[in-house]
Image (cartoon, rainbow, N blue to C red):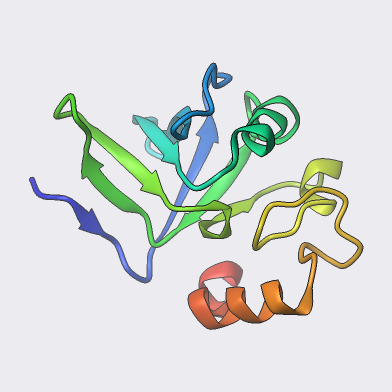
Length: 135
């Protein structure tokens, strides 16, 4: 198989195990709705923010949806899901971690609903569209 971006699709997964690393990416073992185990690699997160995310937000049992998943073969020639930033991830559920996190940039303690700024909201809507989020 070749690397492939599933444009217009949403992949629902559950974090299967806590991540031990945040550099050069946050690596999370996840399980999809079919029970298949996958490796999720989240890039473009500064190490200090990555440590907070794996401690407080991306924890065992957390459910998330990945917009436009990018399935690719990693250096070890095994498949993985690559995400280039938290704006492609929608956390599911009603925990404080989801409510207080900007949906676009991932900053904690957001004062508005899931966005920390109008700019993040505009970028998110323009880049990903509302239909993927609501479906």
